[in-house]
Amino acid sequence: MTFLPIVDRELRVRARLKSTYRFRIVGALLAIGIVVFLLITSPAFSNPGRVGKTMFTVLAWLVFPYCLFEGTRNTADCLSEEKRGGTLGLLFLTDLKPYDVVLGKLVATSLNSFYGFLAVLPPLAVPLLLGGVTAGEFWRLTIVLAVTLFFSLTAGMFTSSVSYHERRAWGGTVGIIGFCAVMLPLFNANNFGYHLWLFHFSPTVAFFQVREATYLANPGEFWLCVSSLFGLSWIFLLAAGFILPRTWQDSATFTPDKAPEWFERLVGRFTKGGEKQRTTELLAINPVLWLAGRNSRQYFFLWVIVVAAGVSGVAGWAFTRGDASATLGILIGGVVLNYIIVAWVASQACSFFPEARASGAMEQMLSTPLKVKTILDGYTMALKKQFLGPAAFLLGAEALILTCQVLLLASSGSQGVAATGITIVGGVMALLFILDLTAAAYYGMWMGLSSRTTSKAMTKTTLYVLVLPLICVPCCYFLWPIVGIVKNLIFINYAQDQMRRYFRVYVTERFSSGTEFGSWSPLPPPPKPSHPLPPVIRPS
Image 1 (cartoon, rainbow, N blue to C red):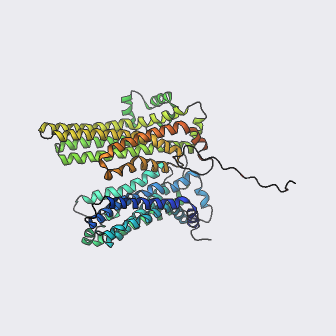
Image 2 (image 1 turned 90 degrees about the vertical axis):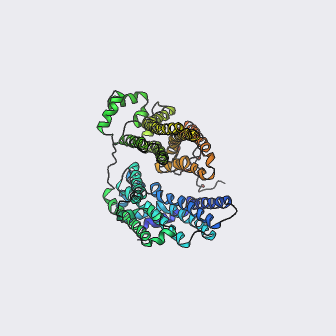
Image 3 (image 1 turned 180 degrees about the vertical axis):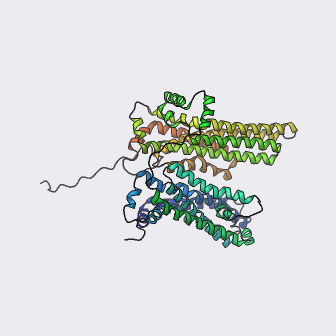
């Protein structure tokens, strides 16, 4: 028997796919384009060392998030998807071992990610020729990026092995990566008077120790972080192999998590009705709104986060009495929370149609007298019901802080220009936030309809709506508001038009041929004509 047969098969399959070559070519072209842009915009190589240092820093900060979140995109649902499909138990009926399945899925889902990482390394070495970057910094960054990618992928494998549903697998992976990459560095930055071993499990801590001065100050700290993170990744991988044979028989029955009873009673006081009455009213308005618009634990957590952030921001501004630096930090935190909510909306919008398609609810809805417009309007109203209130509360808290700050500056008499500038910037940011929410909702619905899985839909929506527009910030930051408004309007109109015209076609014929096509395609490709066998007896 071949050693690691699934790995061997997946490598052969991936070698024949065009996407394997396209992904690394696109990754290399993007990195080369950034290098060329930085070279062109540099002031005639007046200081090549500074240009090389800037180029190295920009590329490092672009590649590090890619390595950090590839596990969420690729491996977070690879094993749980097999559980839902019922194919994982068939694999364990053969002579395959758990490590065969785990390593096979790891290679199948992460090969393109590894190729994309390798494609970026040659452009990342260009700053070595310009100066300002040492060979040690380059190799240390390469090691940190490779270990971070391995950590992200294995964290996704671990959460996928213990999860059954896609959303929970995503949430677990994001929680592990966020705790290690964000929370641990924040704890480490605060001087508690002691240094815990737990801080070494953060890829961000290792990333900040790549610089020559930081590394030479304490070389052992860097290698301790890298070895700890590498060891944690292997623990995730071994745990996935140990847990998977014991969890593949999870029940497919899923009951959505309900919000706490006290929260339901509180909502009932404001709406003057119980949960049963409210759901009955939703059914009378729109059946799809009733199906997707019921309160869940996610709705409860969203309100908790928004209320806590809003109250903390207002209290922090009042406590600091409008200090400029403190107010700037509060507003930056508000902008970050805005983007998190936009990503939350995109995740929710992308998940409905794939889940309805997998459960058969989509075909049942289309077999009823419901019109396509009714289905789309119902899910749009469900998204508004879940996110409109929290988003309005957050905007109100941010507007209150901005208004108080503007009044404070205007009362001094010498800060009129600053007050006017803050008012304009705040209004533009609020408009962009509203448009981002709308674009994430409509384009996420379209991606969920035209993509095979929720993960692919979420990746495309986040990339197109949130990530790519941010690239223009360092290039032409003064045009960023215009670019943000225009791209949101384009995405909203395009998604609405495509869903209105091709909804039934995508639902009924989307995967009939067994192959997937691009989400920008207006219609599925026509089936290839079959060639009949030649007759045995040729006619005379």
